[in-house]
Amino acid sequence: MFKKMLVVMSLLAVMILPFPVQGAAGETGPKQAVEITVNGVIDVLKARADQKSLSEQDREGIRKAVSQYFDFEEMAKRSLAAPWKDLSENQKAEFVGLFQQLLELTYGNRLADFHNQTVEYGEEFIKGRIAIVDSDVVDADKRTPVRYKLVSKEVGWRVYDIQVEGISMISTFRTDFTAAVNKDGVEGFLTDLKARVAGMQTEEKG
Image (cartoon, rainbow, N blue to C red; front, side):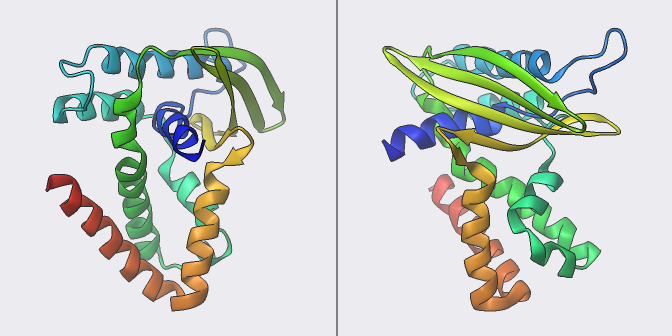
C-alpha cells in the first residue's frame, strides 16, 4: 500500500502545479489549470520510447511542463515551517534549490511506473485566497483520492500541498525536516540535506 501511495504521490507531486488567477474573462481557474498541466505531463509519459523508464529527454520534457507553475519556494517554506524565518536570504535560496532537487530525486523516477492510469476530477472549492481541487486516480478497479491545495498569489494560483488518500506531502516532509533541525540545528540540517541530495544524485547516475 505504501509503495502504491508513493507511486501515486510521485505522479501528482511532479505534475500537479500552480496556475494563473481565476476571475477575469479568459483567465484559467484552478481545476482547468490542473487538468491542462496533468495532461501535458501524461503526454510526455505516453510518448516515452521506453515505457519502463525515463530518459533524460523525458525528464526534461516533464521539467518544462511543470517548471513555470510549480512554486518550489512556497512548498519548501511550508515544509520547513518555523525554522524558515531563521534562514538568511542566501540560505533560503540554497534550501529551495535543494528542496527542488530532493522532490525530483524522490518522486521523479517513480513516474516511470505510470501506465495508462486515468485522472477524474471532482469539485473545485475556492474560499478567499485558498482553492482545493479534488480528483481520483483510477487504476483498474482502484480509485485513489487526491486533493490539491492552492494559494492565490499575484502571479496566479500556486499549489502548496498535495494530499493522497489524506496523507499530505508537505506534512511528510515537515516531519522529516523538523526532526533533522531539532537534532542538528539549521546549519547542520542544510549540510546534511546537501549531502543527502548529492548521495541520491550519485546513486541515480550509478
